[in-house]
Length: 391
View 1 (cartoon, rainbow, N blue to C red):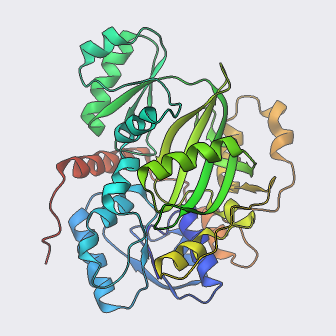
View 2: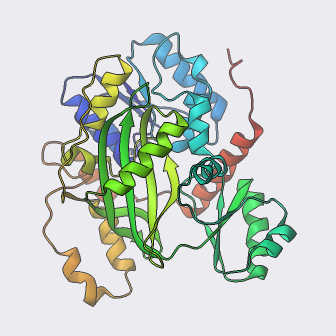
């Protein structure tokens, strides 16, 4: 088994899950201090070219690795790495397996513009979305502010919130120059953020499920979750399954919703077509997604079970401490931060070193480096280069 993007919490969760089952794990990253590389379950480490800044070199490196060694499959974690491995799957199919779905299905979730059009035509509530690429037409169409601008084909970047048409024009131009095509949406006041986390088989039938509610995020405005809890919400499950079946989905997916506090209706925000950062919570709740996906990839029969434990909590400790120091009302909220919790994303008494690494390593790269990589990544996607001729 080859695990890429070992710097992410989700990759560490997979390394631990499969390593405990005596599945031999090779983990890789472009970052030498990646958490997963320090897990005792990681049997071999590789450092590869940065897939966002050196796309062709990355693909060639991975191809050479899987030619030389016998891997059941490759599991990617960064959204862009996933995009690359799915798009250029033909480079690897003679040597190993790539998880489902096929690229033509994957791109429908990856591209928010395509996804929202599919959702809206199937009567799934979404934020009101403006698809025009003409700023003057947008200014005419939009009657109510604030609105949000977000890249259509980029996940996990900052969005622009605009209070008036002047800010719309300024930010729309900047966002398009940096990230390419963008979508403009109404702002949804936050009445809770929930996600449906699932695995579908090759016939688009659900195999496994959890639902999580965000309790805290790394900043007051949102971003990465630092503390969450599993909850039951059959309505969101029904909506998610309906959408994924329309997409003919297979593999793992996280469907993100924001409850609109104005009307209480859950609005679809996006689909993350890969393993999610809070994967360890799903495992703690009784659903071993990594092992289930592994069995699906190697064509082992998997009985469907949509049961998970309700009320299980999990915390990303370093991120939660950061969240506390960014919180404006520390005295009022300190009690909630001090509530005991024994479930952690990274810290484990059975695999201690990744937890220590997470404390002494920076939470993220410098802002300038990350922004530069995001711009290069988006430009690489938009170029749609034919990299399969690498030899």
